[in-house]
Image 1 (cartoon, one colour):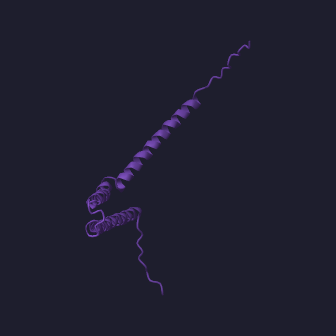
Image 2 (tube, helix red, strand yellow):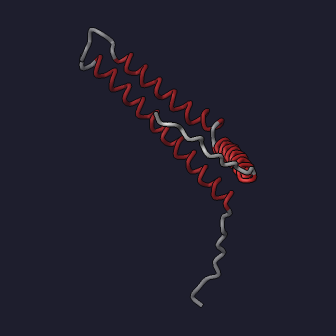
Image 3 (cartoon, helix red, strand yellow):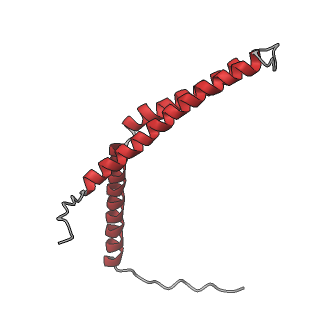
Length: 133
């Protein structure tokens, strides 16, 4: 009577992974855009400090600071847009599967070695006694 017939759709594992990946990508891009805004505002302040407040006026040090910060920003762009395309979830999944297969193969080889050692009869020969002088 008071309860509604709720159509709760259950997400399967693939849909859940896709949703998590999408949320992760959105968060990365949001951080990148925030970094860009902070870069612009910070660069403006560096120029104002150098030119208007005349701090270190004899040398344009703000150029080096902005260049370094710009380099860090380019690395951030590279990480968000390029690295994730080549080393995203699909790449991680394939690497995991490859490593698991390699481990299974190695375990199978070790099992074979152990079985061969168990099947081989070991001959126990007593060591010859040494004479004491």
